[in-house]
Image (cartoon, rainbow, N blue to C red; front, side, top):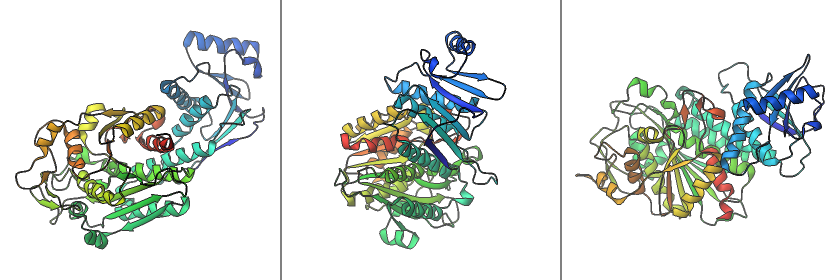
Amino acid sequence: MQISIKKKSIPKSENEITFLVKSNQLNEINISEEEKKYFLNKIKSSKENIVSINRLNENFVLVNCDKEIKNYKDSEFYRNIGHKLNKVLDSKYMINVIDTVNKSDILNCILEGLALTGYEYDRFKKQKKDLKIIVDSDQDQNLNFDELISVIESTFLCRDLVNDPFSHLKAKDLASIIKKLGKKNNFKTKHFFKSDIKKMKLGGLLAVNQGSLDEPSFSILEHKPKKAVNKRPLILVGKGIVYDTGGLSLKPTKGMDIMKVDMGGAACVISAINAVAKSNLPVYVIGLIPATDNRPSGNAYAPGDVVEMYDGTNVEVLNTDAEGRMILADALSYAKKYDPELVIDMATLTGSAARAIGHFGIVSMHNKAEKQHQKLKEAGLEVYERLAEMPFWDEYDELMKSDIADIRNIGNADFAGAITAGKFLVHFTDYPWIHLDIAGPTYVTSEFGYRGKGATAIGVRLIYNFIKNYTKF
């Protein structure tokens, strides 16, 4: 799905026009006194912010923009106005907006909500639709539609990747998509497949892949602008389980039917770096994407196995459905070779995280990264992709001790599953590290505002905003 947002004059002859207005500036638009009274009565008595005025051959939609943006909740208010506006318009794919308010923050939030609501997964539809938004505004400054489009397109990319079925997105397919994106948007990529991965001794990735007929992949993405503000890279690691049956620790059918989404972390990382590269942000960023599916077979890794990881750690595998942390651990160990300034991993890692906070936010943990985590939390509020920080107390380390190996891949208790998953991962780090468990918000079965139904791409705008502000730390 293609999207365009362009600034140009809109002829008054258009059948449907949306006006962004303030209630005390209605004289700036061509409506009658009766229509003004109707609008004012609606916003006062019904507290409606979107009012349609139907004429014989045209439809005016007035959006009340009296509220000033003073905090992140006000920004989200206008994104939701954009979402609701999309629902009331007759034309969903060719939208005309006349801005009489001249507040760039309000306009951008409305456009963001309006455009994100317009997403449609159309890979298998013969009839495809593009979204075109025309903006008529007196604002010449602060209207960076290029950046807005870049972020929205990358958000759509993430949603497409997560919505893609396993039949059309194997680990090698994911590597191929990364390669094409790199060539298109000028970031470097490098890809390793099974023979290379064996030589590299990525033991966790190879173990999870044992039950598969398809090759694993390990992709490296690099955006390194000449005038980057950081000499040491910010590294993003994304879990790329393109389909998860649970392996020999088999999931029930009800839990397995949407497990194409288990590469949501990889999709977020790929899409965020894509947006960063398109906007050419002056930050040195590397992405690491270990990818495979997790299936049972005669050769699948089994509960009770011991796996030697990339860094030499021996892991006692007690649940093959805790596979995401196995491939992430190798990537986190691999990240050490870059001497990173910060590493953030993103993964649909645990049902425990989803049960803890639902789809309303992202579960987070960190080690040696107090300041960076606070900045990430602030970046999340600005785009309303909020972090819920879990405790990371030393006592949880006891739950990860194994009788026969260096560490076990699940905790030895029936509680704190999201935290013990984090405790497993931190074992493979020696740098400032943040863990984001996006299991709750990655995919929803009913509409979640402008994030839609199905894949939401929550995490992409968070990471982009964090990196955009990285120079201010």
